[in-house]
Image 1: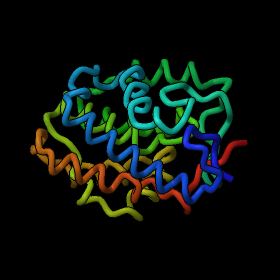
Image 2: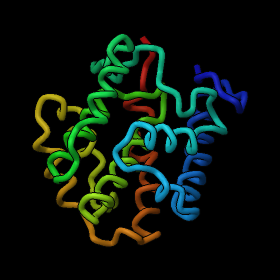
Image 3: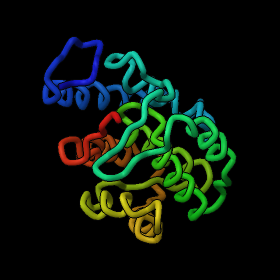
Length: 201
């Protein structure tokens, strides 16, 4: 079964295909039209704006904080009852060093504020913070999918792995359309749609 969507699709496979195509196109627009530069890096409002832009043509809930509890495999993300408080705390977290930025990213992943599309949105959000604070971004083509997914899965308990993976992939080429596009081209790859699909509880 597919999530309710504006496209009228009932097959999860068809929805996944269209979601990838449309969100990738919209992500390119975020970069090329300078929309990301108008957002305040590290804020919840920036993340919501990114999510809304990526998925507004697909879901009614684009940019909106979820109102259902969700899980991925055996991991349950922040319960709805605590979600707003968790997001307030995350927004207040410092982001001036590499470690602080990744720790903030990990906490936002645990919160998983949206019903779907968290991975793509938060990776763009992460690169915004790196760019603003450290004048670097992640070259996602240098990040192995399996290593990344496993490290993110373990990050709530131990974030050493994800820090090591991301630090090794940092680049100074912050204004490169090519580097940005590598992240977009890899976005669906990292989402792990079939293996790690988010489930509503």
